[in-house]
Length: 113
Image (tube, rainbow, N blue to C red; front, side, top):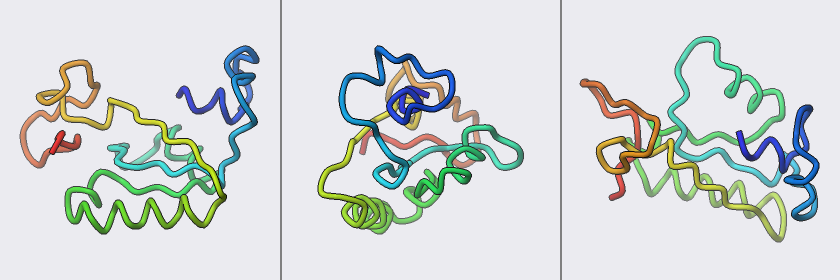
């Protein structure tokens, strides 16, 4: 995860981390991710670092409320924050470079709409 470099997690590349001041977990909101239920390294790391998470399912249910939750978390964290947009949260049909398969059933990835 690219943000891991900015958070300066173990294994980060110093040349990537040096692009600005260190990003701290309290200045980060994971918005729209479609992490699977059950064991998942990325979700476990978000929980371990106490990073606010607004999952894709919440965005599908009520996009406005999910955006307000993310914005409130970002605003309460600091004067400035980083917005990292990972195309992997988008539906493959909307963004063919995304990594969310959406194979039948309820859509997992977010639409461009």
